[in-house]
Image 1 (cartoon, rainbow, N blue to C red):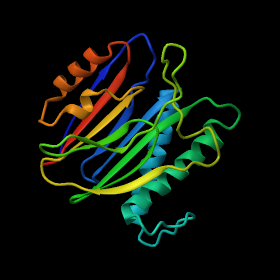
Image 2 (cartoon, helix red, strand yellow):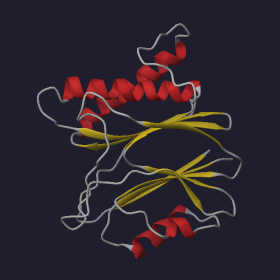
Image 3 (spheres, helix red, strand yellow):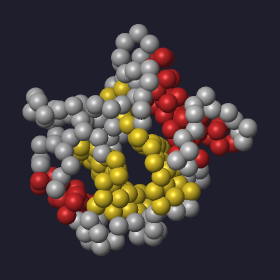
Image 4 (cartoon, rainbow, N blue to C red):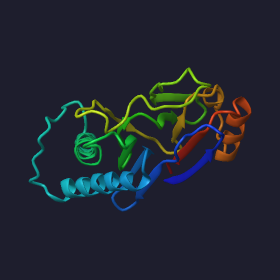
Length: 221
């Protein structure tokens, strides 16, 4: 798998995500902190350690009911997201809402990718000679105040969350496109041929140069 990313900044605030990629354990965790990066790192460390514990302990029992339509990997990620929310809500945000986090967790098992998500980045699938397909996209709380971006789905502001989860099966040459942006640009639907990430970024900034965004690309080989 080949990973690349780009960000585009304007005078509007959009936090840059924290990213942890573990090639040996085959997962990618992306957290966008609306608040302290240091506190977000604590939630990230907690999430990673819990996933590793679940994977290493075959007799581990979960307090959360397993969803039968999801793979074991997707159920593990869902469990991590629920525990991460509880950790953030009851510890860091115990007295006041200091931090909320947009969250995407991807885990890979051969050609299967499992995911759990709350908020950005949006998740798209790009297949060879086809247009980009949306897998999971979240609207943001905006449309006012000069399109100032605010997350509408995140960890940490409530004691319970309902993350989106799923499984995909990828072929060689497939790509996963990850986008944190208040607007989904038209150019992301129109690209049928393969392009490098710099060209994607140029097209997006030409379409809307006032909106900050972060773009990630994962190429399957």
